[in-house]
Length: 50
Image (cartoon, rainbow, N blue to C red; front, top):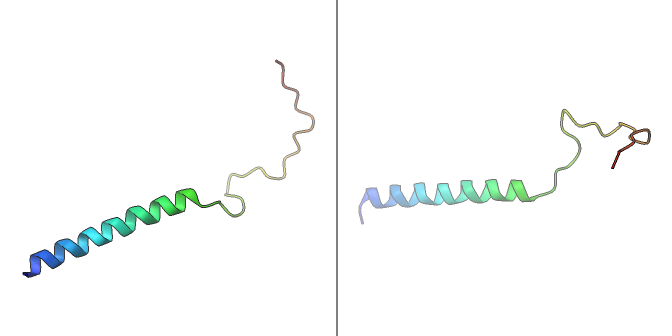
């Protein structure tokens, strides 16, 4: 086995880890509000016409 094989394996493992982390972060629930969250807004006066 040569060094190129190990470098390719390390890059592949890194790519798999990166994609798995992105998928995990997109599927987990968000905690708290973001910067543009309007959690404290009262929508009781809003009337929706059908």
